[in-house]
Structure formats: C-alpha cells, structure tokens
Length: 258
Length: 330
Image 1: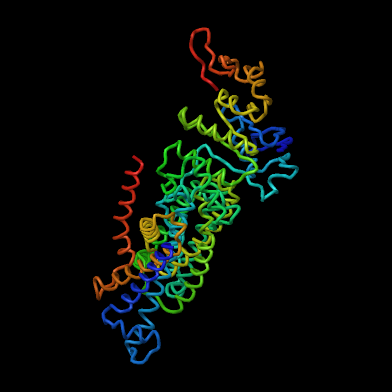
Image 2: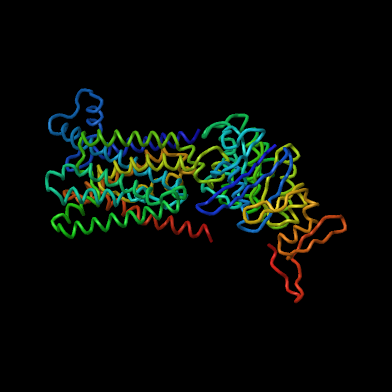
C-alpha cells in the first residue's frame, strides 16, 4: 500500500503540489490525468525521491525517501538515449541497483533474457539503443523496468509518442505486469485509454487532486466535465466502454481536448 | 574477453610509442641499448647517451603519457557527464582559468613568479571550474546550465588574460608559447607531482566509470536505478578537473586529445566511452607520446609546439565527427 499524506512540493515561491492525500492499494493501476502543469510529473518525481517535500509518502508504512532498498521502476516520457549501448546492456542497467554497478550476476543475465523474450526484443538485443524506433524504445524501457523487479512502477505518458497499435501493445504489457502484483502509477493525457486500463483515475489540476476514484465512476461524474470546463463529452460504445472526446460548441467548432 | 584484449593492445601501443619516442631524436639510440639500460643489464648506454635517455627523454615521455592519459580520460568523462559527444576537458573554464593563472605568473614579478607558473595555472584552472559551479548555483544539477556557466566563466578569464597581455606586451610571446603547449619543461620533479595528482584522479574516475552509465540517462531514470546523478556528476567533474588542471599546468594547453581519443576508442570498441576508460587512458598516453615525438623531430632542430600537432590531427577529426553526427541525425 502506498500512502500519500498531505504532500506539498514548492518550487521557489510556487506551490506545485498542494496537500495531496492518496491511498494506493498494492497491485492496482492508478492513472493520473490532467492538463499540462497540473503536477502529474512532479508527483512521480517526488515519489522517486528526487524532490524535497513536506508531508509523507509511505510504502508499507515506511517513508519512501528513507527506504533506499525500495525498487521503484520509472519509464520516462522522453528518455535520454545513450550512444554506443546495446539493447541488452541497456536493459541490464535495470539490475544495477541489485547487483552493483558494472556487475552482472548469472541470475540477472537470466532475468534480462527472460524479459527480453517477454517484450519480443530477443532478436534485437545486440542492436544499439540509439537506432531504435519509438515503439521499440518504449518496449526496451519497459523491459528495463521489469528486470528491476520493482515494488511499484511509475510510467510518465507511456503512450504519448506511439501510434495506436503500439499504444495498445504497451498498455497490454503494463496490464500483464500489474497482474503479477506490481503496483502501477501512470500519467496519461488520454482519459479514454486511461479509463480503459486503469481501475482508478486521479484527476489533477493546478497541483491539487480534483477527483479520485474508480475509473467508471470518475468518467461519468459531473465533476469531470467541470474539471475540463465542460469542453468534453462522454459517449458510450456498444460494449459499454466510454469514449471521451472534445465537445462540439454551438458554432460547430471543436474545442481542444485538454 | 575481447575487452581485455583491447586494453592490452592499448597498453602495448603505449609501450611501443614510448620506445620509439625515447629512441629517436637528434641522436638516435638503439632499442636494444635502451632496453638494456632500463632493465639494468650489462652493455647499456653510458655517459652522455645515458643522461640523454634517463634525464631528458624518459621524463619527457613519461610526462607526455601522463598528460595524454589525463586529457583523454577527462574528455571521455566530460562527454558522459554532459551527454555531449563534443565535450572536452576544457569545457568548464579549466583551460581559460589556467591560461589566466599562467599569464598572471608570467606578467608579474618576472623570473620569480615564472617558476611558480604551474601552480598558478593549476589554481587558475581549479578556481575557474569552482566559479563555474558557483555561477550555475542551485541549478548545477542541470548539465546544460553548467555548460553555459562554463562558457561565461571561460570568456571572462580569457578577457582578463587578454587585458593583462595588452598591458605587458613583453609577456605576449611566453604566454603564446605556453598556450600552444609543450613538454620541454619535463623533469623527474614535474613527473612526480603531476603523476601524483593524475593517478589519484584516474583512480577515482575508473572507480566511478561504471556508475557514469547512469548519467547518460535522464535524472529520473538515474534515481530509479538507485543513483543520485548530482553526486556522481560532482565527483566525476571534480576528478576530471584535477586531472585536467594538473595536465595543463605541467604542459600548457594541448587541445583535441580529449575529443579525438575517446571517439577513436569508441569507434574501435563500439562501447560507451565510460566503459573503456582504461583503454582510453592508454591510447591517450600513446597518442601524446607520438605527437610529442613529431613535435621534436618533424622540423628538427626546431621544435613545434605539441598543440600544433594534436590540433593538426584533431581538427579534421573533429569535423569528421560532426559530419558523421549530422548524417546520423538525418
């Protein structure tokens, strides 16, 4: 269980996160949704222990910032991609905290092999990471996160740079990871996709949690529309899945989706 | 397995380069007699030839190797830290700071301070890098801010140096020749103190080289892999600066070694440069020993500044890397 209590983060004079309180059960997928600048990425960075904060973030009762042995995997929106490093070497970095930097245990090599296979990367393990396509790189990042054997996994816009086919592939993979008991926290611009995969949606705005609850409830709540200034409309597909799109204004123009 | 073969080949290249460098000059010494002298076997060199080898050529070759290893390794580390393949060891103001320190030593007090030139250059280089970190302030966590602060501090030091030179036109020539770099001052004394600092710096850099992998990722990823990037960046930059400032104060400004050698080794090994620092150190040492041999012999009896030779090879190579990079991004 992750318990975030009264969490606030300040940058200079600006309060970027304000009194956030969340309770995230193990093995669930929570999706942070909100406009740019809402504080979603800052919340992820704070959970990684990069940001000084007031309040508390606890995992199983222990403050995250003080628990150095905790394994938190992070899948960045824009990874910094090193030159001259192969896919296998890059994925092996995920074991660095467990094995020590520059060391590779036989066990780690097995796990890397296993995860490369699970992410269909085995064939390109010798390829340099700076030559991969966006979709391939995303799979490599997920493979690296998997070999960390993390307690929980943070994903910052995991699908933003991908086409629909790769978006679905990546999200399905994350769903499989969740099924193994790993807690997932992701940010996503696309509420429709978020609601399709995450059982919980947390809507953020200006550093605050505006709405937090089970995906289906949040999607249908009147607060959601007001959070997006009534510029969205929710439609139901035949299979019961919700689709959220930009609302048409009276003049027939479409407002931008937040 | 073959990683060790590359390191061993680089070490062998350094040995061969050193043997060539101590052998050739206005007076050529035979390989056999050199080896016998160094190993203390009978029929070694005697009298003047012995002095020439042990007191003139050998310290110069050892100093060249130390400086080459320091510059090449620091260059490779800077490239990892700044995620920039064109970063060089002089990036954070070490060169301009050392230049200013040397100019102060040359323009003030004539002969007295001149003897202290290496210390002034060393302090100038270290202070300039410290100033860069201070200017970058809290934001030093961000590599690009640090880089810009380095450019600002470097420009300031260079402007101040130019001002001092203008006011003391007699200093123009010695400052100019120092800036171009030379190993003519090599003596066992210089080798001892330069070797001391350079070995400390290289030891630290090779120790942290594996963790430098994390600096090639974003800071968030580094944290998630259990590394505080700011801490590693500070240790790496401090050690690389110690090596660079020592090299500069012992031999002046020798350009391009820090860029050419890491790229050359990366081309050969196809590995991230921080993973082959030891090979880079050996190749850097061999490169500078050979460059100095060229500086001594190409226009003999006149001596070319070694910086001319390294830049002569380095500048075209630099352009080649740029072109290859542009092609790669298209």
